[in-house]
Length: 437
RNA sequence: GGAGGGGUUCCCAAGUGGCCAAAGGGAGCAGACUGUAAAUCUGCCGGCAACGCCUUCGGAGGUUCGAAUCCUCCCCCCUCCA
Image (tube, rainbow, N blue to C red; front, side, top):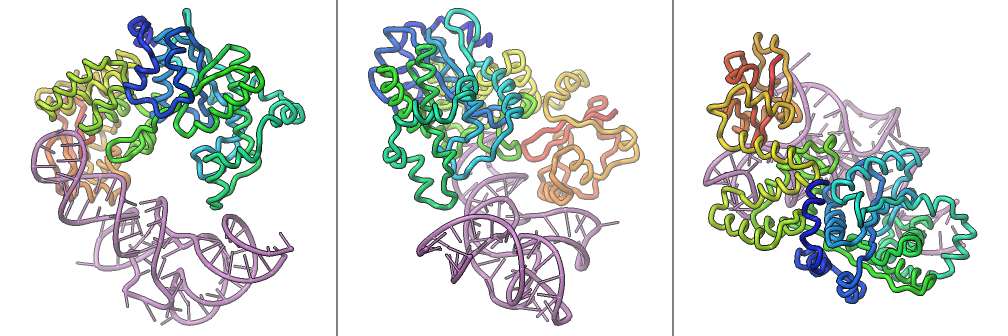
């Protein structure tokens, strides 16, 4: 929050849509007029978020960052939580019908997600952000009333021609239910409602939202005779075609919730990005100005092994989400573990980072008796099964205190404690701190 | 309701009585190179008390010395017809 606010004056006079375009966010705009509009007046815009999970993930970052950019340029962002539409499920970009969620689950998810949004947008001050829940207006809408007031403005002929619907109709793998077919009307109504209540004139979203957004624009024009706009963002892929944050190695999905994805893991996720992606990702996931990004990228060309842009990316992204203090701790922690500093390390160094980097406690009594390496690796969460532990050891992927241990028969003993009660287990490129108590 | 096709290990996908823990590809893991990167190459890739044992091929039974493969019933998906 603090990060966003401090910087929020800087870009006030620039054209935020052009800026987003330069940074690589924008895929399509419904009308070029939006470029002028954001320069002429302070607008209100919105983006919808699906509360079907208890946390947003890295994939949701693009629209969040975009809303933050808009706010910093003096516009008012609205986060719409789809409490009502979340009960239906958006067929866009989905290949299967969604399972229904209970009202209770949605309510609790909504609360958690709201807290995450507050990291990106300020909810205080002049153009403070706003969180709304479409359950508040859709939840009490009568069916007959809805069909009469909203449904009559939609042509089924046009709807089935939409890409998102057409795909589900043609590829009959799963088909589409009447419920999901109706989804578009609900989202269109949201836009109309926000335009009427808050003078909201722009909806932004992922590229799969194009159909829903234009439906909202059409409905608003019909009901209010007002022209509103839409912008869709590129789907961000890494150079090898993977979606950002979608199911990472053994991390799984990279969540924004610090309980689900530890800040250290979040930081590491960004540090490990490929060289060729670094500059592009800096433009998308940090607020750094172009000159600085270019100079960071120039550093990379000189000393690629220093991973300067990746580390900066990780620091900035972590600072936005978890705060500068946490980001700094992640940096120190990573620097310590990966910087080859284990040699001169002290107990105090480990006291500081234990529990922050992946950490495990172990009973001292077990160590006195001696633990065989296979069990040790397994219990310190360095392997998913004993077989996996054996494999990793045999293949030379296991290190204790940075010294390779390839002997299955190896016994871990108190002599292995080099830093007070601590020991460092490394599997592959991952460090695990083990403390004996 | 009728006719046909199909459900295989994380995903896609071979396999139609033993040689099947199950081809191939992808993903993943480890190593080499190096840089917490990419590309490339190598090895691994169900579990365990590990030259053997146990569990797995939609579910439950059955035939057989022996089944993912054959039979019966059930569940689910798709296509066409009504």
